[in-house]
Each structure stands twice: as C-alpha cells, then as structure tokens.
Image 1: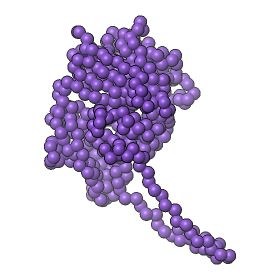
Image 2: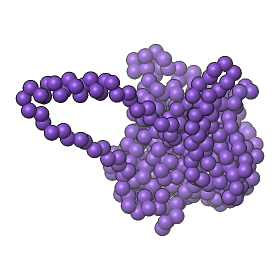
Image 3: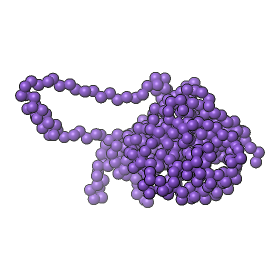
Image 4: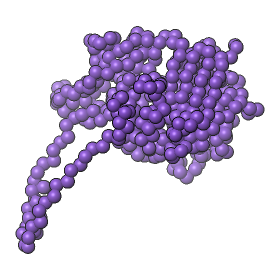
Length: 416
C-alpha cells in the first residue's frame, strides 16, 4: 500500500481494440454475414470464479472480528486463521444448524480471540456447482494471500480514528484524503475508519457499493483495520437500499447500536430520512418517524447502561445532526426525540455530516455538548475528521482537502 501512496495513481484497466482491414466490393456484405454467423456459433467464455471484493474487516472488538468478502460465483467459504504466523484454525458461518454455502456474500465472525494480539488470516472459497440429491458437486477452490490484523486491547489507553462523510459516489475521495492527511510520515494515523453516511446518492446495485466504497477501502486499509458505515438519508434511497445490511456487519443487524473502544463509548444512531414519511420521493414505503421513536426508547436505556456510565468519554455518531442541520422534518423530529435524552446523558462529542458545510458548534442553550459537522463531496468542501482519544482527552481535528485545519476540539475528561 505504501507504493500506492507514493505513486498516488488511480488503478486503471486497459482495453485494447482490434482493427480489421476493410473488405472491397461485394465481399463486404458476405464477410459481415459470415462474421455474424461465426459470432453466434461461438459459445461465450464463462468467467472463472474469483473474489469480487475483500476481505474487509467489520465489527472488531478485543475478542472478535467479522471478516467479509464477495465471490463471483456461489461457494462454500471459510477463514483460516491463527495468532502469530500460523493459520491452523478454521471458521465458517452457519445458520440454524446449516453451514453457510451456495452463497456469494460471506460474513464470518471469529470469536474467542486474544485481546491486543496479532492474527494472520486468509479467505478460502470453493465453488458450489450444484446439488444432485444429497450430493453436492464442488468446483475450483480459490484462496487469498495471507493478511493480518490486531485485535483491540482489553483496556487500551488510546486509539486513533478517521471519519468521512457525504462522499456521494465519489470513491476517489477515499484515497485522496487518506493518502494526503491520514499519515504521519509513512505510518497510518488511524486504525479505525467511519463512513458517517451518504456514501452513495441512490443505491441501485451491488457493483456500486463494491466500486465506490468496499474496494477503495480494501485497497488501502480494510484488510487490516475495520470500517463502519452509518446510514445516511441517501443510503435509504434506491432500488438496492434494502440490501445494504447484507454487505456490512452490524450488531443485531441494526443501524443503531453502541460499542466501546478503549476510553470511548460510542453511540451510533440512524437519523433516517430528512423528509416526512408522506413525501412523494419515498413512494409510501417509509416509516422513519416510527423508527426514530424506537431508537429513542433504546437510547433511554443505553445511557443508563454500565458501559455508558463508566466510560471516560461518550461520543455520538449520527449522520443528520439534531441541531444546526436546517429545519426539515427529519432534523426537527430527531431533535424532539433525541435532544432531551442526549442533554440528560451529557455526552462529550457528536460527529455528523449531511449539510455539506463543515462547521464546529460549541455547547449552547439547546445542546450541552460540542458538535462537529463534516463537509461535502466537492473539491474545497471535502473534509477528513481525525480523532485521537486517550484516557485524558479527546483531540479532534477537521482537515479540509487542501490541508487547511477548519475545525478542532480538545475535550478534557470530565470529573464524574
């Protein structure tokens, strides 16, 4: 990956064109007819099985991680892994007693891992050709190179993460901002990445997610470090939007959840759509008001949990901020539901997107916590938010694509 950064070149595939010499006179029509007949008679060459995307890491903790990848054809797949340099263990997915097979999207969780430990792994997939009664016909087996990751420490004192938002189907933003501003010297300045909503405009197909988010992440970091995609309002749109959870790993398969990393307890909320459920854009197929009400009840319980209360810091990730995000229905409804609960919780920091205008907002009469809102997808508006968390403080910097520091917070630990 270092050579990719140094060269800073886009990967491009070369397509060559074959020129034919022109035919003379009446031979042209006959030759064209013969060529067409030959083309019809030539069987199409079937593409061999291969890895479409991955591996990419999801849902990492101190004792577990989920490894995902996509194959071209239906397969039976597994992970070979182990601590150090050995990969003597093997794990596969199963559901209701059946081992996952005859599928393309793989989501395999490794558990009981040692905290703060280096692990090696590779992904393996064997094509499933078909079934004949109780017999399964298998085809070719493909395997990846050996990759590595380090589990989070049980009680680690610090970590560094970066946050993108509102990429809107511009995948070049990922390498551009990471290669420019995600390194100190030749060392990555992060080991966890958040995509805080609106990575797409309208989600229409698998290839869009692969080309515009998964593959750019895999090329730079995702075989080694996990990433998290929060749902923005644009992830709610498009014919393929309901399939998004198949391609990423979420606790309990929900877009709202919490997790702890070192000194920080994170709350992730799904702000939903910005318009009302009766808007014509949604075709009568939205229930975001009800969905936000469910999240409010969950949030009320979450802020009373031991994990939330004992954390040194509490950070909220949400695409549409309940404050400073205009007066559309989704913002106001989120403010009415989440605002009082969050003020009671006294969170330390909120990171959002949506407006395409980078801003920082100090606590005020409406919200008693600082808010950071990242920029948009256009050059000169794009931002990378960097968070360095320790037991003593949260150090946040928001960097514009040209390197200008456009926002910062230094938040000391509160006395509890």
